[in-house]
Image 1 (cartoon, rainbow, N blue to C red):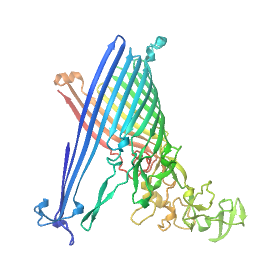
Image 2: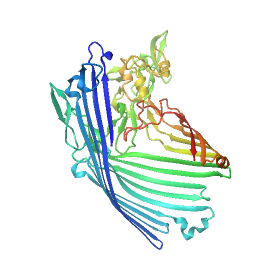
Image 3: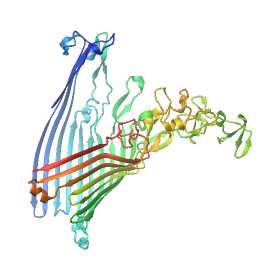
Image 4: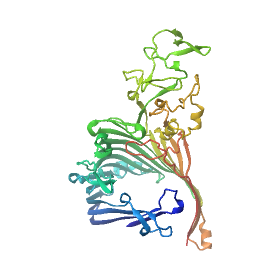
Length: 580
């Protein structure tokens, strides 16, 4: 149980001539209860070991909030609400939310000489968040293991192979991470009109149910050379169905979105891990842990099989059979230096304008004077001219020369090619150094923050210096960025390859240097242990990404969009551990 109490008071000294003294009192109470019951049985018969477990669990969460706000206090010396003269109905409220889970589960395990291993689980879970007919979900799982290093035909490997095991597993899990009342028809307070409270119904999906994920995994583990080297290999396929997602609905009905089971996706990947004690000595030790993974997430089904855009500026296009996180937008080929630079023949080959004494004379094509028909690109009904971006036509769009939504093409994908980490520890006597790195290579990011900063949309935002130095200003400029004229909105109001960047990085995420006092000194001062250490987190990042931080979170379908999230904090610390 937890309670939060907030008070607020704005005295008369902080008011302007038309303001009101005001304050509020808000109380939030959160509490939950949990009940778990188990019945277990374990038995060993010679080389056979069994275990059985049967149980159930019930849990409920409740959140209550109440707020009272008042105005026109008679004096600044009494802050409590009994001193307020006016209470506005629309500012005072109380609300309550509840959520409950019930589970029944069974687990059974068996092994023979720890060589052949089996485990099976069955769960039956119910959630109050789902529709009445879909509240319960059945989630089985099973795993098999074979320690083949114990077989007689593997005895020849004993000098170098300590242990080797093959693993096979299959399981189903459920997800109920949505709002508490996403499937419940209900009325909510939408304001006060002429002193009367207004109510409006919510929009719900009557068949809302569990999101289900089936995962199949094959793996192998090897331990060698007296546990100096440990290797792990895994291949997995994870299929998620009945994906829970907020789907946009037609605006004409008065709502923005509705939570539904919208489709399915597949995650398929491989993982490799390595642990190695490179040095094992009396005083020296050097250990390394390394892992690398590749994962590809693909949409396998959509609600009504209708693709859609999502994310900031609708940068990500979600469609069946394609990877998640694909950025679709416009590609560009520089900036038109002159009005006459926007010129093409009937096959849409760009013409080169020729000027004599600053006055346009004629066009050239492939080194020869061109006298044929001249075509020009348009966008939003405007002929593009000097200082405008030369947007590229989609070759599959039959309406050449008209830049519109049909010219959006694949710009990149937020999913990295590989990702993983590296940890290493080097120690000499009592001195120890620990380093931890993590990395992600190959993924693209949409730098939405730079897009908003550099799109010349208003006079209150200053572009970055690189954009200022390379923007078009005068006819003939060989520029990278278009004219800063904010009336040329066709240059900025779109997702484009200007803001798609390589998000690869390597990060020194943690460092710790410590020193442990020798035992002989500890015995003299009658202590069990004493050490001093220095640590740092998020110390260095090697990346070409121009945003604050290439490592940030996101949603299931709209990750990879940098909306200016606060970067990870760089930390330094120093400490002493003493044991008596």
